[in-house]
Image 1 (cartoon, helix red, strand yellow):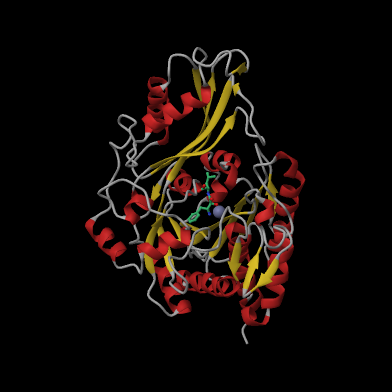
Image 2 (cartoon, protein in one colour; image 1 turned 90 degrees about the vertical axis):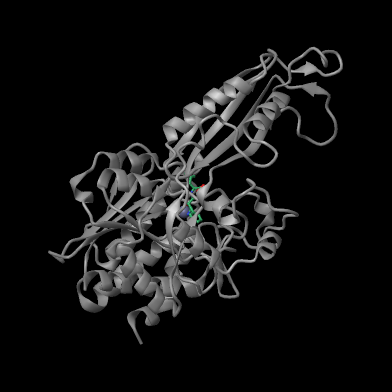
Length: 450
Ligand code: BES
Ligand code: ZN
């Protein structure tokens, strides 16, 4: 039995311990848990044989750093993950408490199980196994794990932009994406970027009786609805002037590869529980998900939302709006275009202000590089199926930051499954993928070193 087979129970116990820490980066009251999760990782890395493991302090949550540089002449890989998680609400929809990991049907259920604690631990345990069994690694590695990916990644972005010499590497490895289907090994070569904003709208100076003032008073929630409906039409086309000008369409070859993916639109719709799919006419589902931008409203706060009726015209309201961007859209330009379009669409009776919460650039990696080839080989060996190349509609802003500042491509080798409920109640990680992920990552390091 290999080290990896022998230690499955121990790996699982470690994962459970990690998952019990509610390291939610978007809620300030969880700061102590964030620190605990970071320290937990430092300990894990030291236990794996990386004595150099330490915290890097800075603006925002601590980064976890560790390096092993005992393979001179061999490539150096920057192993990335995030120890923070999304909030767990709505709590009542969880079948088991989000921070008390529960195993059902070979899946471990907990917030962060897949995104990204389970997948971050894959890299740690892969390195641990190699160090414990060979006494060395086939390549040099540098771990860089952040604690605010879900909140915009301020600290890591700031750090990487300084181009610290210790980060010099040949490629980054990111286990934070999904497989296209169970058993189908997948490398993600494109991610969307993101601009996350709040639209603050003010009408009257204070709330007003809707009978006494209705008909004369401005209504900020109505204004938000009007603004939104001008930014995107009923077909799903974004109407912000200039917004789509820079989009680089996928090549015919890439589109043909997407056509070959095992996909049933009806099944997909049913999984979603939706009556009908939406989106821009003239584009396939994958183009709409991976190669076209979005504009989504996530929530509108304002007015009266309690039980029963209250006849009020609210004085103010806020909408949370994000845009996902695709190559070669530029976040700064998209923000300007968005602000201009909002100003133009805003009824004169109210005042609107856009606040940007966080920003990430899109990324697109040429799959024809030796690191991606090595990953595809390791995946194919361990899963017994040809690796497919997809993109993802999600965002991992650091991938673009690595490319721009360190000049390195990222290998996005993900072990999540499409039904892992990322960011939703009952998030899970399929345990066979956890164990196989560890072995695949180790094999990948061997192939790169060979
Ligand atoms: N792991 C996800 C991104 C992801 C999910 C990629 C599924 C591919 C498939 C990541 O943790 C995430 O959720 N990112 C945020 C980024 C944002 C908050 C800056 C996202 O995409 O919303
Ligand atoms: Zn993630």
